[in-house]
Image (cartoon, rainbow, N blue to C red):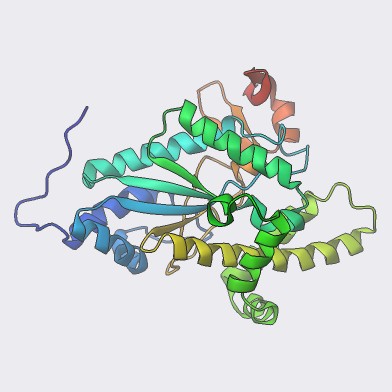
Amino acid sequence: MTSPARPRPGVPAGHPAGCTAVLAELLPHRRTLDTGHGDTPDAFPAQLRQLAAPVAAGEPIVFTLPGFPCKSPNPAKVLGHLPDEGERLALRFLDALCARIEAVHPPGARVVICSDGHVFSDLIQVPDRDIDAYADALRALIHDEGLTRLDVFDLREVYGQRLSHDAKRALVHERYAPALEALRSLTRGDEPTRRLYQGITRFLFEDSASFRGTRSALQRDCRRRAYGVIQRSRAWGELVGAYHPGAFRLSIHPQPGGSAKFGIRLLDTPDVWMTPWHSCVLEHGDGRRELLHRAKAERLGRLVFHQGRPNHFVAG
């Protein structure tokens, strides 16, 4: 076990160099659509500001990461409705990232996974019972893997068990969601928001296997639901901020330079938008693991089971 890094002589506790060292651990895993950029800590003033308070106080850094909602309902993408090797590897990565941060910031770090499936399950057309099962299995996986630097936070922590899922969604939307017209205007004028809208529309279109109308009707329906998903996602972000003030905000979506959120890449993917819950793992002969849609992974490898459930593919 390596000893914690000691502050350099002449650098007092809370000096920006401590923030820079933490941010340097995050930058190799940044998820972005930017090209031709040089990722150096001083290019991320918003993130350095978020780190300043816990570093100066000598306290653990808390990261919040909205995501890990549920598995895609598209069987051509995933192996089932429960976490599998993709989630296992992503969770291990996050825990290991916190361990590396502890080497440069001895008080350490934690990631609060803000599982948001219930926030928009009606819009992505996934049953709430599947989302409960996914979140419960995610907690069990964290426990079984001994990932002590991770926690899970969802609507059950906010509103308990007595209210219906529809009632909880209505409360979040009413209190925190941006107005639809304001969001439409932002989508027309703000490039990152436009890309997010297009990405979510594509996901919804791909995951609407049970739609019985025409292709053009499905496209209209997905565009409508995409605005709802973004509204609810932003509402969830506001709620998470209220419950975890002062936390460093991570995002599973690509984020441009200058954003208050820091996009984080959990695993290798051929698509910057792909996540473990929209795909499955293919393990290559050299040990490299890659996220791919199930339909493609099936063509390249054989299926491996873990504890009786489909888990991932092995190439060859």
